[in-house]
Length: 319
Image 1 (cartoon, rainbow, N blue to C red):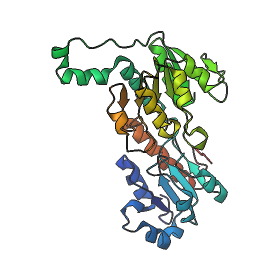
Image 2 (image 1 turned 90 degrees about the horizontal axis):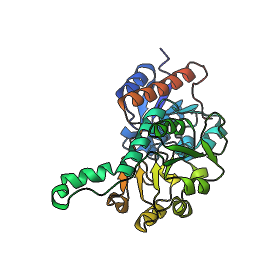
Image 3 (image 1 turned 135 degrees about the vertical axis):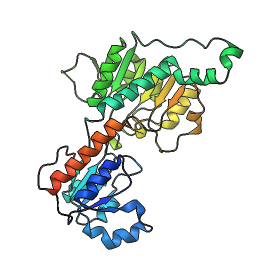
Image 4 (image 1 turned 120 degrees about the horizontal axis):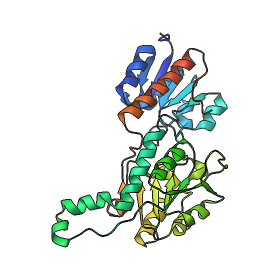
């Protein structure tokens, strides 16, 4: 067992409970969200903290301000593959190690992407609402929908999640195209040199790229116009990747056919203009939220922290 002298600050609650149980069993744990006056607590105890456990989403993260309030911080362990809400530059400047949980969530995030793609194409959620409202009886047969086979699935960011999504789309006889900063000679898919080129060719534009300043509003009005009135946007990346107001405008103008969105710019707030549309499927950032994946992520967070505390190399280092 690691010495209880190694002190860990949890930014907020994380699931499953086994993560908190493991942390409590091996370290001295402080729960920041339970402090009535967090600023006062940090001022009094921030210098005692060796490690920070958080996640990479906008509600958690690790800002430069928080990092500065933890002068002896040595490691940040994030529960998630994305780390755009963690100020990695501030951490790197201090020599603080940052870890994330890549790989273990690829399959479930890709499953969610494929589910959204299927839903917007075949309008499953909209048809469910139509049937529940009694419209099948009163208005007749539901309007025709879109077949997947033979369509182009354009993937933006062909990392682990993108590659898993591509395998699923291939099973539906879709043609896989992608845009990625680097060529991927390990895949047989068609690469595009620009996002606009991919959007013009894609029937479904699926976003699986990282968030952060480099990709902020990468999908803008121009990209959406290139996708066109028969094209669908699927976002399982980060809400910041899409200019949400441009997306709403494109939907209202009929410039694209629809969207499947698991992430949003101001989570957990979802614009009413999106919530009201039948051609938009929305889910509450649940792509990795399965019992199995959350357990695997939690175990990787703990394994990274334990390795660091024992003086060993962490498993999945970001910086």
